Amino acid sequence: MTLHPKDRAIVEATQAGLPLVPTPFEVVANTLGMSEKELLDRLAHLKKQGVIRRIGAAPNHYRLGMTSNGMTVWDVDDSVVDELGERVGALPFVTHSYRRPRALPDWPYNLFAMVHGATRKEVLEKQKEISTLLGDACRVGDILFSTRILKKTGMRLRRKEN
Image (cartoon, rainbow, N blue to C red; front, side, top):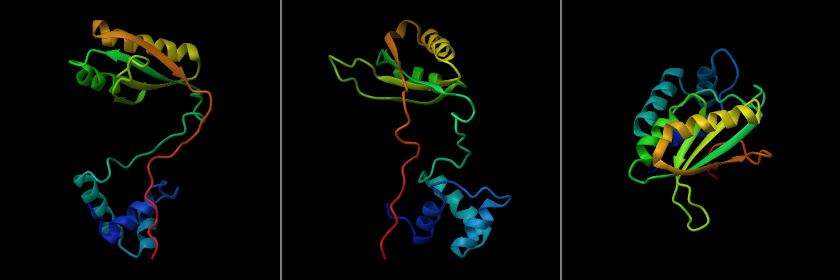
């Protein structure tokens, strides 16, 4: 899919975040030489097409005191992993979850769910809650605690060279 040049400019202008001002869309629109209505219409169209998934705030969980973070990993029966993965992803303390192929024999896990907490104890309690939800469909689980931040951005388009 090739983006219209205006749509690409919108994605490039907003992908790192919106300006922290009372009227962020107006500021972005003015920067791009279009009206705020055109910008919002184009964003709605991009969302409808699935080019962008959402526009929302992304709080810094470290600044909010959530400094203990763990990727929970689970070996869940393939016949129910999608259904259970959606339920795990809907838990209020899970920031993202996804299914990945196993790498047998060393890595039996096919469901991953990121959990944040103020303490390791809190994260371990949340891991137990996920384990209870998964029930007998889960053969084994573990948790990988973060020790440092390597990257804190989503995917970015590279600016096109003129």
